[in-house]
Length: 356
Ligand SMILES: *Cc1c(COP(=O)(O)O)cnc(C)c1O
Image (spheres, protein in one colour):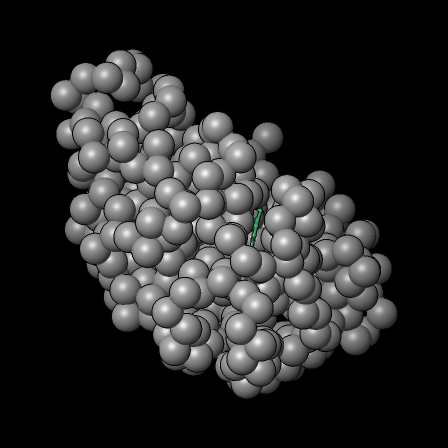
Protein backbone atom coordinates (compact mmCIF):
# COMPACT_ATOMS: atom_id res chain seq x y z
CA UNK A 1 0.00 0.00 0.00
CA UNK A 2 1.17 3.51 -0.77
CA UNK A 3 1.87 5.33 2.47
CA UNK A 4 1.92 9.09 1.92
CA UNK A 5 4.94 10.54 3.69
CA UNK A 6 4.72 13.75 5.70
CA UNK A 7 7.94 12.76 7.48
CA UNK A 8 10.97 15.07 7.47
CA UNK A 9 12.74 12.67 5.17
CA UNK A 10 12.29 10.51 3.32
CA UNK A 11 9.58 12.50 1.61
CA UNK A 12 6.80 11.78 -0.83
CA UNK A 13 8.08 11.14 -4.38
CA UNK A 14 5.96 11.93 -7.42
CA UNK A 15 5.00 8.97 -9.64
CA UNK A 16 6.50 10.67 -12.69
CA UNK A 17 9.84 10.90 -10.91
CA UNK A 18 9.66 7.26 -9.85
CA UNK A 19 9.35 6.25 -13.49
CA UNK A 20 12.81 7.73 -14.13
CA UNK A 21 14.26 4.96 -11.98
CA UNK A 22 13.17 2.31 -14.44
CA UNK A 23 14.71 3.86 -17.56
CA UNK A 24 17.31 1.70 -19.28
CA UNK A 25 20.75 2.27 -17.88
CA UNK A 26 23.54 4.15 -19.58
CA UNK A 27 27.27 3.67 -19.19
CA UNK A 28 28.98 6.21 -16.97
CA UNK A 29 32.01 6.65 -19.25
CA UNK A 30 30.05 7.91 -22.21
CA UNK A 31 29.15 11.30 -23.65
CA UNK A 32 25.53 10.61 -22.76
CA UNK A 33 26.43 10.39 -19.13
CA UNK A 34 28.55 13.54 -19.30
CA UNK A 35 25.64 15.45 -20.84
CA UNK A 36 23.45 14.26 -18.00
CA UNK A 37 26.11 15.27 -15.47
CA UNK A 38 26.54 18.74 -17.01
CA UNK A 39 22.81 19.39 -17.10
CA UNK A 40 22.55 18.53 -13.41
CA UNK A 41 25.58 20.73 -12.58
CA UNK A 42 24.04 23.81 -14.14
CA UNK A 43 20.78 23.44 -12.25
CA UNK A 44 22.40 22.59 -8.92
CA UNK A 45 24.59 25.68 -9.24
CA UNK A 46 21.49 27.78 -9.85
CA UNK A 47 19.70 26.25 -6.90
CA UNK A 48 22.66 26.88 -4.58
CA UNK A 49 23.64 30.30 -5.96
CA UNK A 50 27.17 29.10 -6.54
CA UNK A 51 29.86 28.78 -9.17
CA UNK A 52 31.45 25.94 -7.22
CA UNK A 53 31.33 22.41 -8.56
CA UNK A 54 28.60 20.29 -7.02
CA UNK A 55 29.70 16.70 -6.47
CA UNK A 56 27.40 13.71 -6.58
CA UNK A 57 27.88 11.12 -3.87
CA UNK A 58 26.21 7.76 -4.37
CA UNK A 59 25.75 7.62 -0.63
CA UNK A 60 23.36 8.96 1.95
CA UNK A 61 24.11 12.33 3.52
CA UNK A 62 26.15 10.82 6.32
CA UNK A 63 28.77 9.74 3.77
CA UNK A 64 29.22 13.31 2.55
CA UNK A 65 29.39 14.54 6.16
CA UNK A 66 32.26 12.12 6.63
CA UNK A 67 33.93 13.34 3.43
CA UNK A 68 33.67 16.92 4.67
CA UNK A 69 35.62 16.40 7.88
CA UNK A 70 38.11 13.83 6.61
CA UNK A 71 39.19 16.17 3.79
CA UNK A 72 39.37 19.46 5.60
CA UNK A 73 40.92 19.47 9.05
CA UNK A 74 44.62 20.17 9.57
CA UNK A 75 44.42 21.78 13.02
CA UNK A 76 41.10 21.15 14.71
CA UNK A 77 37.41 21.12 13.89
CA UNK A 78 34.74 23.05 15.77
CA UNK A 79 31.56 20.96 15.88
CA UNK A 80 28.57 23.19 16.67
CA UNK A 81 25.89 21.00 18.20
CA UNK A 82 22.22 21.76 18.85
CA UNK A 83 20.47 18.62 17.72
CA UNK A 84 20.84 14.99 16.74
CA UNK A 85 22.42 15.50 13.33
CA UNK A 86 24.95 18.11 14.42
CA UNK A 87 25.89 15.70 17.19
CA UNK A 88 26.27 12.96 14.59
CA UNK A 89 28.77 15.17 12.77
CA UNK A 90 30.78 15.44 15.95
CA UNK A 91 30.75 11.66 16.34
CA UNK A 92 31.87 11.24 12.73
CA UNK A 93 34.77 13.61 13.41
CA UNK A 94 35.77 11.73 16.56
CA UNK A 95 35.48 8.29 14.93
CA UNK A 96 37.85 9.39 12.18
CA UNK A 97 40.44 10.34 14.77
CA UNK A 98 40.28 14.01 13.84
CA UNK A 99 41.06 16.65 16.44
CA UNK A 100 37.83 18.43 17.35
CA UNK A 101 35.85 20.24 20.00
CA UNK A 102 32.13 19.95 20.49
CA UNK A 103 30.21 23.01 21.61
CA UNK A 104 26.77 21.85 22.64
CA UNK A 105 23.83 24.08 23.51
CA UNK A 106 20.19 23.30 24.32
CA UNK A 107 18.42 21.64 21.40
CA UNK A 108 15.66 24.25 21.31
CA UNK A 109 18.15 27.11 20.94
CA UNK A 110 19.86 28.39 17.80
CA UNK A 111 23.62 28.59 17.37
CA UNK A 112 24.46 32.30 17.56
CA UNK A 113 27.11 34.24 15.64
CA UNK A 114 28.44 35.42 19.03
CA UNK A 115 29.09 31.86 20.15
CA UNK A 116 30.96 31.09 16.93
CA UNK A 117 32.97 34.33 17.15
CA UNK A 118 33.92 33.54 20.71
CA UNK A 119 35.14 30.03 19.82
CA UNK A 120 37.02 31.01 16.68
CA UNK A 121 38.86 33.79 18.51
CA UNK A 122 40.96 31.07 20.17
CA UNK A 123 42.66 30.48 16.81
CA UNK A 124 42.54 26.72 17.43
CA UNK A 125 40.20 25.81 14.60
CA UNK A 126 40.51 25.54 10.84
CA UNK A 127 37.11 23.96 10.16
CA UNK A 128 33.56 24.43 11.46
CA UNK A 129 30.62 22.04 11.12
CA UNK A 130 27.03 23.18 11.49
CA UNK A 131 23.59 21.91 10.53
CA UNK A 132 21.48 24.46 8.67
CA UNK A 133 18.15 22.91 9.53
CA UNK A 134 18.03 20.53 12.48
CA UNK A 135 15.57 17.91 11.36
CA UNK A 136 15.40 16.53 14.89
CA UNK A 137 14.07 19.79 16.35
CA UNK A 138 12.63 21.85 13.49
CA UNK A 139 15.16 24.62 14.12
CA UNK A 140 16.94 26.62 11.43
CA UNK A 141 20.28 28.11 12.47
CA UNK A 142 21.10 31.67 11.30
CA UNK A 143 23.69 30.55 8.76
CA UNK A 144 23.96 33.90 6.95
CA UNK A 145 24.91 35.69 10.18
CA UNK A 146 27.28 32.95 11.25
CA UNK A 147 28.86 33.09 7.79
CA UNK A 148 29.76 36.74 8.39
CA UNK A 149 31.74 35.75 11.46
CA UNK A 150 33.53 32.90 9.69
CA UNK A 151 34.40 35.16 6.74
CA UNK A 152 36.89 36.96 9.00
CA UNK A 153 38.91 33.77 9.31
CA UNK A 154 40.85 33.11 6.13
CA UNK A 155 42.00 29.64 7.18
CA UNK A 156 38.66 28.31 8.47
CA UNK A 157 36.57 26.13 6.16
CA UNK A 158 32.82 26.31 6.66
CA UNK A 159 31.03 22.95 6.37
CA UNK A 160 27.24 23.00 6.26
CA UNK A 161 24.87 20.06 6.50
CA UNK A 162 21.88 21.43 4.60
CA UNK A 163 20.18 18.04 4.31
CA UNK A 164 16.59 18.96 5.13
CA UNK A 165 16.88 22.56 3.96
CA UNK A 166 18.34 22.43 0.47
CA UNK A 167 15.65 22.83 -2.23
CA UNK A 168 13.24 24.05 0.47
CA UNK A 169 14.91 27.23 1.64
CA UNK A 170 17.32 29.69 0.04
CA UNK A 171 21.00 28.95 0.56
CA UNK A 172 23.47 31.38 -0.97
CA UNK A 173 26.59 29.27 -1.05
CA UNK A 174 28.92 31.84 -2.65
CA UNK A 175 27.66 34.94 -0.79
CA UNK A 176 27.89 33.12 2.50
CA UNK A 177 31.26 31.55 1.74
CA UNK A 178 30.16 27.98 2.40
CA UNK A 179 33.01 25.62 1.53
CA UNK A 180 30.94 22.47 1.51
CA UNK A 181 27.17 22.49 1.43
CA UNK A 182 25.69 19.00 1.35
CA UNK A 183 22.27 17.40 1.19
CA UNK A 184 20.80 13.97 0.58
CA UNK A 185 18.08 14.16 -2.03
CA UNK A 186 15.45 12.20 -0.06
CA UNK A 187 14.36 15.30 1.85
CA UNK A 188 13.30 18.63 0.33
CA UNK A 189 14.29 17.52 -3.18
CA UNK A 190 11.49 14.92 -2.91
CA UNK A 191 13.57 12.21 -4.54
CA UNK A 192 14.25 8.56 -3.75
CA UNK A 193 17.09 8.03 -1.27
CA UNK A 194 20.60 7.06 -2.32
CA UNK A 195 22.23 10.20 -3.61
CA UNK A 196 23.81 13.22 -1.93
CA UNK A 197 24.85 16.47 -3.59
CA UNK A 198 27.55 18.75 -2.20
CA UNK A 199 29.07 21.99 -3.42
CA UNK A 200 32.81 22.10 -2.86
CA UNK A 201 34.84 25.34 -2.88
CA UNK A 202 38.29 25.90 -4.32
CA UNK A 203 39.51 26.67 -0.81
CA UNK A 204 38.31 23.29 0.43
CA UNK A 205 39.86 21.47 -2.53
CA UNK A 206 43.18 23.17 -1.79
CA UNK A 207 42.88 22.20 1.85
CA UNK A 208 42.03 18.63 0.89
CA UNK A 209 45.28 18.40 -1.09
CA UNK A 210 47.18 19.34 2.06
CA UNK A 211 45.24 17.12 4.44
CA UNK A 212 45.74 13.87 2.57
CA UNK A 213 42.39 12.32 3.37
CA UNK A 214 42.63 8.85 4.78
CA UNK A 215 39.54 7.89 2.83
CA UNK A 216 39.88 6.30 -0.60
CA UNK A 217 36.18 6.47 -1.46
CA UNK A 218 35.44 9.95 -0.11
CA UNK A 219 38.47 11.67 -1.51
CA UNK A 220 37.56 15.15 -2.72
CA UNK A 221 40.59 15.88 -4.94
CA UNK A 222 40.10 12.57 -6.75
CA UNK A 223 36.39 13.24 -7.13
CA UNK A 224 37.29 16.63 -8.57
CA UNK A 225 39.56 15.08 -11.18
CA UNK A 226 36.58 13.18 -12.57
CA UNK A 227 34.26 16.13 -12.13
CA UNK A 228 36.44 18.01 -14.63
CA UNK A 229 35.57 15.30 -17.17
CA UNK A 230 31.87 15.56 -16.26
CA UNK A 231 32.01 12.14 -14.70
CA UNK A 232 31.91 10.57 -11.29
CA UNK A 233 34.97 8.75 -10.09
CA UNK A 234 33.20 5.46 -9.38
CA UNK A 235 30.07 3.92 -10.85
CA UNK A 236 27.27 6.21 -9.72
CA UNK A 237 23.64 5.48 -8.83
CA UNK A 238 22.43 6.06 -12.39
CA UNK A 239 18.68 5.60 -11.71
CA UNK A 240 18.80 8.20 -8.93
CA UNK A 241 20.73 10.55 -11.21
CA UNK A 242 18.01 10.28 -13.87
CA UNK A 243 15.47 11.15 -11.21
CA UNK A 244 17.59 14.08 -10.00
CA UNK A 245 17.85 15.48 -13.52
CA UNK A 246 14.10 15.32 -13.99
CA UNK A 247 13.37 16.92 -10.63
CA UNK A 248 15.94 19.71 -11.10
CA UNK A 249 14.38 20.54 -14.43
CA UNK A 250 11.03 20.74 -12.69
CA UNK A 251 12.40 22.91 -9.86
CA UNK A 252 14.35 25.33 -12.05
CA UNK A 253 12.30 25.48 -15.25
CA UNK A 254 8.73 24.72 -14.24
CA UNK A 255 8.13 25.61 -10.60
CA UNK A 256 10.90 28.22 -10.33
CA UNK A 257 13.45 28.32 -7.51
CA UNK A 258 12.04 31.34 -5.71
CA UNK A 259 8.49 30.04 -6.07
CA UNK A 260 9.58 26.78 -4.51
CA UNK A 261 11.02 28.57 -1.48
CA UNK A 262 7.88 30.72 -1.23
CA UNK A 263 5.65 27.61 -1.31
CA UNK A 264 7.71 26.11 1.50
CA UNK A 265 7.33 29.34 3.51
CA UNK A 266 3.56 29.16 3.09
CA UNK A 267 3.39 25.53 4.16
CA UNK A 268 5.63 26.25 7.16
CA UNK A 269 3.47 29.21 8.17
CA UNK A 270 0.34 27.16 8.01
CA UNK A 271 1.73 24.31 10.10
CA UNK A 272 3.26 26.73 12.63
CA UNK A 273 -0.04 28.57 13.13
CA UNK A 274 -1.85 25.27 13.54
CA UNK A 275 0.76 24.07 16.04
CA UNK A 276 0.40 27.26 18.08
CA UNK A 277 -3.37 26.96 18.08
CA UNK A 278 -3.45 23.45 19.54
CA UNK A 279 0.03 22.76 20.93
CA UNK A 280 3.32 24.65 21.04
CA UNK A 281 6.50 24.67 18.98
CA UNK A 282 9.68 23.13 20.36
CA UNK A 283 12.27 25.49 18.83
CA UNK A 284 12.70 29.02 20.15
CA UNK A 285 10.80 31.69 18.18
CA UNK A 286 12.65 33.33 15.33
CA UNK A 287 14.34 30.12 14.20
CA UNK A 288 11.46 27.94 13.05
CA UNK A 289 12.24 25.76 10.11
CA UNK A 290 10.85 26.24 6.63
CA UNK A 291 10.62 22.50 6.07
CA UNK A 292 9.81 20.69 9.32
CA UNK A 293 7.94 21.60 12.50
CA UNK A 294 8.60 19.86 15.80
CA UNK A 295 5.37 20.19 17.78
CA UNK A 296 5.52 19.87 21.55
CA UNK A 297 3.02 17.38 22.89
CA UNK A 298 1.42 19.77 25.38
CA UNK A 299 -1.86 17.82 25.40
CA UNK A 300 -0.51 14.50 26.55
CA UNK A 301 -1.45 12.83 23.27
CA UNK A 302 -0.39 9.21 22.76
CA UNK A 303 1.92 10.06 19.87
CA UNK A 304 2.76 6.46 18.93
CA UNK A 305 -0.94 5.71 18.75
CA UNK A 306 -1.63 8.81 16.66
CA UNK A 307 1.04 7.72 14.20
CA UNK A 308 -0.36 4.18 14.03
CA UNK A 309 -3.88 5.46 13.40
CA UNK A 310 -2.69 7.81 10.66
CA UNK A 311 -0.91 4.92 8.96
CA UNK A 312 -3.52 2.21 9.34
CA UNK A 313 -6.65 4.25 8.72
CA UNK A 314 -5.47 6.99 6.39
CA UNK A 315 -2.27 5.69 4.78
CA UNK A 316 -0.38 8.75 6.00
CA UNK A 317 2.83 8.89 8.01
CA UNK A 318 4.21 11.67 10.24
CA UNK A 319 7.23 11.35 12.55
CA UNK A 320 7.55 10.93 16.27
CA UNK A 321 9.87 13.18 18.29
CA UNK A 322 13.53 12.34 17.74
CA UNK A 323 15.50 10.54 20.46
CA UNK A 324 14.69 11.97 23.88
CA UNK A 325 11.77 13.87 22.38
CA UNK A 326 9.97 10.63 21.50
CA UNK A 327 6.29 10.91 22.51
CA UNK A 328 7.06 14.34 24.00
CA UNK A 329 6.81 15.82 20.53
CA UNK A 330 5.90 14.90 16.98
CA UNK A 331 7.21 16.20 13.70
CA UNK A 332 5.49 17.15 10.50
CA UNK A 333 7.57 17.44 7.37
CA UNK A 334 6.29 20.17 5.06
CA UNK A 335 8.91 19.82 2.40
CA UNK A 336 9.37 18.54 -1.12
CA UNK A 337 6.47 18.77 -3.54
CA UNK A 338 3.65 18.90 -1.00
CA UNK A 339 0.86 21.39 -1.60
CA UNK A 340 -1.10 23.50 0.83
CA UNK A 341 -4.07 21.20 0.17
CA UNK A 342 -1.95 18.20 1.23
CA UNK A 343 -1.02 19.96 4.47
CA UNK A 344 -4.48 21.28 5.33
CA UNK A 345 -5.87 17.80 4.64
CA UNK A 346 -3.33 16.18 6.96
CA UNK A 347 -3.96 18.64 9.79
CA UNK A 348 -7.74 18.23 9.47
CA UNK A 349 -7.33 14.47 9.82
CA UNK A 350 -5.19 14.92 12.94
CA UNK A 351 -7.86 17.25 14.37
CA UNK A 352 -10.48 14.57 13.74
CA UNK A 353 -8.45 11.78 15.32
CA UNK A 354 -7.61 13.85 18.40
CA UNK A 355 -11.04 15.52 18.64
CA UNK A 356 -9.43 18.95 18.62
C1 LIG B 1 18.43 13.07 7.36
C2 LIG B 1 19.54 13.91 7.82
C3 LIG B 1 20.87 13.44 7.88
C4 LIG B 1 21.26 12.01 7.63
O1 LIG B 1 20.94 11.65 6.38
P1 LIG B 1 21.22 10.20 5.77
O2 LIG B 1 20.82 10.50 4.38
O3 LIG B 1 20.30 9.27 6.48
O4 LIG B 1 22.63 9.86 5.93
C5 LIG B 1 21.85 14.31 8.26
N1 LIG B 1 21.58 15.59 8.58
C6 LIG B 1 20.32 16.07 8.55
C7 LIG B 1 20.08 17.49 8.93
C8 LIG B 1 19.27 15.25 8.17
O5 LIG B 1 18.03 15.74 8.14
